Image (cartoon, rainbow, N blue to C red; front, side, top):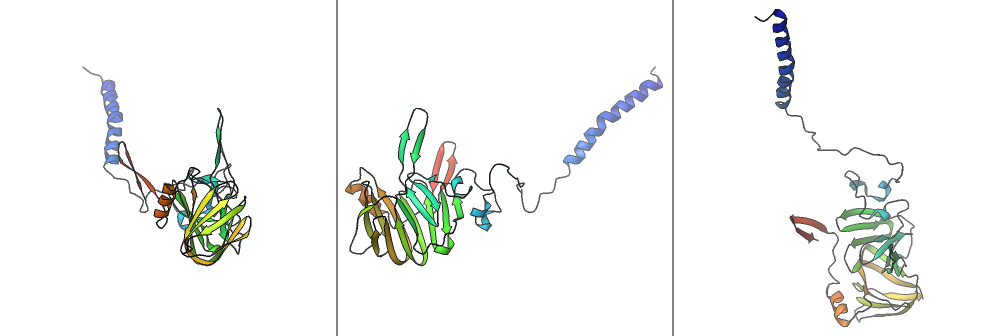
Length: 268
């Protein structure tokens, strides 16, 4: 026959075993409320990296910012070159510079040297910093609001595209020298030769371009899109014809979309 102490121990043990199970069932039966605004990323302060927010448009600061897509445009002074394939781009002094980089390869590393082969700015330089107004998987858009200039940088594009929103005189400068500048009769396509044997093609609606000095080309007041593409060193009439064909249509963004376990599509 069991003693009173035995019954006490059995009842006490049952209480401690069943109580957590009862509590668990109650907790699981009550769904947790979901915040009305969805998940909010906590704010973090870095002691190493500078605050990139001054380079972003205010409407972009409500969501997480990319960390490595175009970081050189938004860290420190935002004036270090960023590689977008096939060009390097650098934003500084209210201008955007383009470089088709030379490559130095060693057993230890590969480096690409930046030379500003062409830089585009407003002739009336306002010395303003750029603003990142939008970005996607494959692109970033840089605005110079006071200069009326917007640059669409899209990875893989053979063109640099600049949109001029209001009548603005433009300057196209180079760290090299311009040896010749010629155009078609409509002044919608220009061929620009540099003293390093590189050839750039400039496309736009009708525009007047003039060599002001060996390293500077200026324009009259212009509104619209202007596009620049380097003719590859092994350039042929076929390659130039392809650049001519697609010069009037330009991408402003691009998304990389996984459409299947092994399929990646690119949407523009």
